[in-house]
Length: 385
Ligand code: NDP
Ligand code: MG
Image 1 (cartoon, helix red, strand yellow):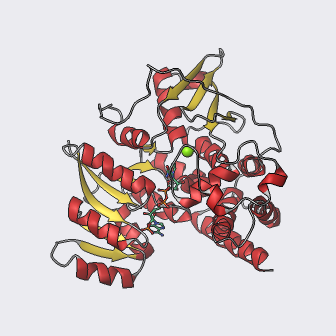
Image 2 (spheres, helix red, strand yellow):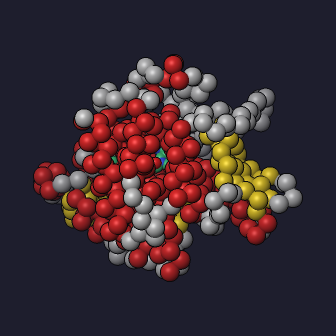
């Protein structure tokens, strides 16, 4: 059966790699919808190759330019949050790949679930901000959410391989540690955005790359894992593994550990999210068993990574607090990328915004959207004063 795919965020790191998978398995996929933010020239290129029925861009002005440029093709052009929402419910789509960055993933994911689509989810912010709501809705609609995040793809595979969820002791998320592993506070005080963007193992979009340098990314992944795998809050641990070969592990009650390994290459988890329950052979680079390899695992000491500690705290408290942590982080990272605040200011801002928030438990979508907005405004205010 040919799967009809909608890709939200098709011009980004995950989006372009998803299109590589589609190209590699031309007989298994067709692309029916593509959505992006601002990169309309790349979107036009993609539209000419993959011939979707519909595309969506950030605003009306860009949509008008694109309409003119694509006038020779029968492609509908939409814009803004409404366009993104319409694409998530596109009748021609079987699977929606959510690869936009940030809070903007929440409503499209919810819409795709409510429209009965299979969801391949890269956008972890959706589960950080609205995990309880999203997972409840997925259960109600019997929706399969396939994780694209490599750690969660690994845990999914380990759990399926072992097939005995009830005997699970804990999941262990591996973290490369990012570009600054081993640096002390003094050394971190003056690191620049340019240095933080040089990740040793992964080439990703700017937000997640900075989040990897602060370890906020691992913190978000802890919350993501909690929701995806219906864990209890004490069942998630993180460990530094600089080589990024073991993508994560699950440990059972008897002490046995199952791990998933592979090269650090997002093509693999993207492919598996789309091929599950099958596996398809591919020509991608492979782990070389003809060479010797060293794999290292380093414990994480509490206090070592403040952003990771804050994510555990947000998970513990729950309610709107994780959405607030994500909203504040989106703003803080943007200011750091524009060289307006220092690297160490990021955790300081997050801690301050979290401490000012009045948490609401079991929030509705509106309350989550409000908490996100409040958190962004609060962070902007703290930066500007
Ligand atoms: P990028 O910054 O590379 O790409 C983001 C994509 O989203 C772009 O296509 C961008 O469009 C689009 N976009 C941004 N805002 C909007 C919006 N409001 N409406 C529509 N489209 C929008 O990010 P990544 O691909 O690195 O990450 C995407 C998601 O996947 C993130 O949530 C990240 O945490 C997660 N993830 C990424 C991994 C990776 O290896 N990259 C690994 C694991 C998870 P444009 O560029 O045209 O403006
Ligand atoms: Mg990850």
